[in-house]
Image (cartoon, rainbow, N blue to C red):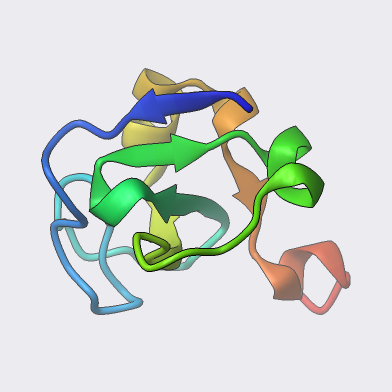
Amino acid sequence: MRTLPLFQTGPATTNFQECCACGKTLMRVVDMVHIINGGNDVLHPDDEPLYEPDAGDCGCFPIGADCARRLGMQWTFLAPRYRQGVI
């Protein structure tokens, strides 16, 4: 299973209108990441089916465009409302 360290220890915020990596306010939530291992790592979207949630699973959080590019867009997935074509 592939993981990548987040920029800092744990999400910068639990507010779903802010970037989980830097804490900046987001005008709209497009990209998300699944944060695991107590907030230290990001799970690759292709490995979601292999992942078994545990106590260190923080869930999915929004990430801003700049932070997503720094992390690597392959580590992000579209927010549910964008996948469903609502927006």
